[in-house]
Image (tube, rainbow, N blue to C red; front, side, top):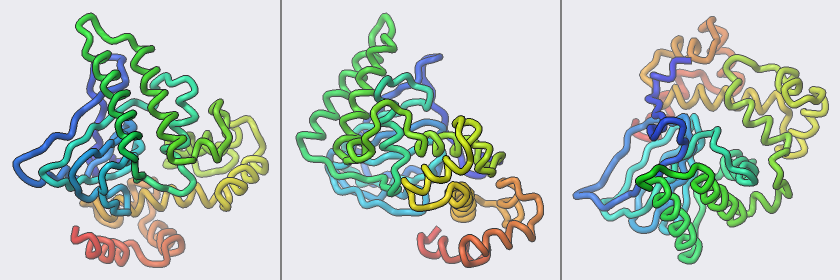
Length: 285
């Protein structure tokens, strides 16, 4: 896929160190961060101020204090007030998190698709303290101890997952949940592999068993989840990318423009052109 259609930001830090902390500070006027995506996870902690955060195809109001989540590959744009304060924790998908892996899945692959969560002042204070400890370790003159940073990050993720109730309702701590493992594999493979059997093989189970697991958790078949992921990417590109309809199809590995149009119409109920016109008008793109 041509990810340059929508700019992709990578995590720049010390070689081999997959975590970074940044601060959101007051500015002379409102700040707009243009549309882009990342190849890493982002945890936004908004302490003061207001604004709007567009994540994929949904606009989230920023009502502080709150936490926003942006997963790798998601397209987002942040419009914030001049007085906004907060912090952002960025970490690579391959960060070693221990039990924090289950919390990462719980937060960033939620069954309800939620990306915004209110925080109490006490919860914000706990987040701020953990982020500060991470930052202090990252800035050590003699270099950070990886296990310490990732330990703080794992604790932060577990706390946030419990606050959103997702980890507790899952009842999964060891990171073996087949549904969320399927979503992880799908995120990296949906453009090339669209057969349920492919993901079932990777998970060492039958396609029927995978389908049962997915349907129990999401109410949908595994095949429909795969198609929905592909449709989401098509909608992202139609909204944000300056590509022709034909080029959007090519980016999704659909080499026949007529087939892409038929597929999109069947999946979305409108043609790609009609969808692009309506969604760009909605967001005044």
